[in-house]
Image (cartoon, rainbow over all chains, first blue to last red):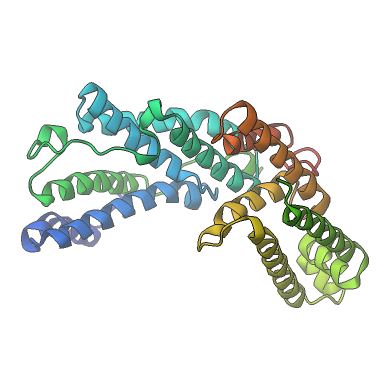
Length: 195
Length: 153
């Protein structure tokens, strides 16, 4: 945080307090639902920005990794009874592992070739999930069982619980961003670096 | 059952592709279009108005898409999302055959059609497209600029 001036730090603190207090001030569950969505979309937006903004790679295949994470935590919970708190991390790991071969393939390509290759991998993955019903419930999908109020399984009676989960994730990401505000070295694929 | 509509669609599509190729390669406007897509600045130095050329290209492309849609209708049902799967397939075909290469796109479409049929026959009734995408990705591993392009630039 050494990059921050005092005024900036003050505004950040005010912003953080407002965000934390928000579900206690606006208690309508409809409004909280919208806040959850806003934070979720901002989180996904940050994820995409890393790729499309900093690294300048127009990838339209992010849906595949979103889906892989969702399926990982769902399968872990339903088939193995593992809490989504662990599934959350495992989902990220699975998406990262899946991105290794896909990235190896796609980063050889440029411009529209790269973009369409990312769409193709996402489509192929979607079709695999549609076809192999034993893998993950096929086209109709599934819903995780409602456990009532079970914070250890990431289920809350009050909507505010979900709000704090997403706020925590998005906040962690924002803190990470503030610490290294420069574009990380070496984020550009080798083929696009100058010199 | 033999569908004459499919035969007509095939013949008209081939004729339109041929006409497009002739247009792009032997008329002044077509040549201007290819020049503007290769290098916009140099093309405008040669007296080509890139904006006008791109407008014509856009209109022409949409006219061809409309023609494709009307050719498909005798054996497809019409519904609001009918274009989606074809748009993705068209994008894949154009990229597979190298952007801006009419012949490449034709060859690529043929490959995709054969791959889809083989997939339906040998992998499963609903896996045609998986085979198409796998074929597409594998081709790009070896030809990063599509079938019509040389080595990676």
